[in-house]
Image (cartoon, rainbow, N blue to C red; front, side, top):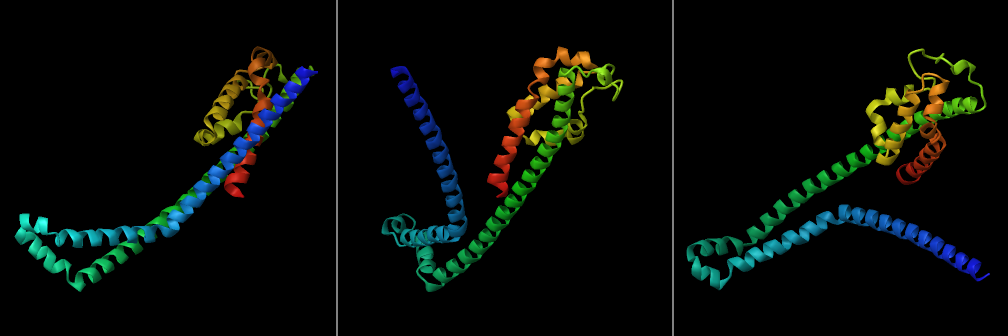
Length: 234
């Protein structure tokens, strides 16, 4: 009885830790996005404050008695120009023009970054959909082989020199499959290597340990697709 109570406590602790970690990650993601938006919006103000402090620092340095004693001619000329109202006006005009240019660059880069993320996400979704459709066809073939329906797969009737499994989508998409996470891409590479070695039904039994992972990979693809829809599309 005590052991079951302790096991329940341990399971509850694990569940609580998993939920708290998930909430903590979501909060960090939200804070990161909020800070990024605030920096983009208030970047001209932040830079304006920095430039204003630099202007005041230049005035203080130009009027410093210690520096003017060391470099009298240089700081006499500098102090003559710095203490005029035209200096502040020209400094502000130049700073304002630079800020407008900088803000335009920031907005442009941010816009193209958002468009790029959207394009990559849509391409990933396309790759996942194509692979899911092909893997489901291959799973149907595996079920036929497990049920003993091996007549049409004895000599690779689809393609005498090829595999009894369908691998066209994997080869057709080429480098686009690298857009998937590294671990998932590696698992797919191993799976398709096993599928390509099956020129007849006997090849399945030789590579059964590799090919039977197809259900887990399909589940991982569905899970990854749902995360893409939630985080990048919605």
